[in-house]
Length: 363
Image (cartoon, rainbow, N blue to C red; front, side, top):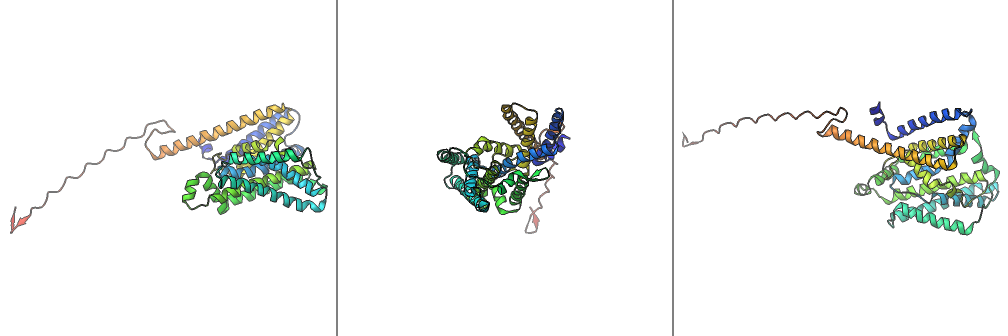
């Protein structure tokens, strides 16, 4: 059984963990006389997945490229303000506002990508600096909520098909699109190559800058979509809606929980969605059980540490098994010593040299 678990890829393990969390949560919720799988509760869980899912999809792109994006909460706040102020309660301005928001957020992502690739600044520092610039702009120019979102756009965050919110369907469709891009396009292959080893990618003829710039643009656009969803739910734009949710750290945590390697080059979008779902179920469970709000962060932190420790342990075991199969050493599975190598066969005796003749006589 343990050997079978080791053979599963990380994404499969994430969904096994999600299944275990669902079972435990269902039992605990049942003790309160409620059902975890009631339509209202399912809707709450899926609603909780939507915003974090958008941000985590974009964060997955930059982490696959061995970078980070800490500017996402401020991009979300700016996106909500741009959308709400442009719409200003008018149904006719919904489409122009959405397009303008996506263009602005793509520009921020382009700036992040250029700073990382052209100036050679690490993604952590580059996006932190850009995030602080955005924070200063928001704090200076906005003292509270601004703009107004018309009712037609508020339906994006308020309606659903049965218990499934429209926003969750859009988020899953985006995840499928990004997963296709990563697996089936040259951009995705190059991004994995750059994240795995930029030097090897360069020697292989991969243009290193374009995939990483594209990943940062994608991350900011995904954060912009999350900001649009928050504006739809609030009905206004807010300069603090992103930072209050700590979406930068939560998105990184969801990506890591989903099995993506923080150093880049390995991971998947669907693993990230599984990590987002685990966080959504845990948050719903703690709300139903009326846990102390500060205890939520403690539980999230423990879940992340345990998951990463298990992933690291699993990779170490996998390396040892491969080493044992290809080189002499103790058998990991049985603990027995290797069989001694057979002694080399003795070399055949040399044949006598033929006699030479000079003038018909043997010497």
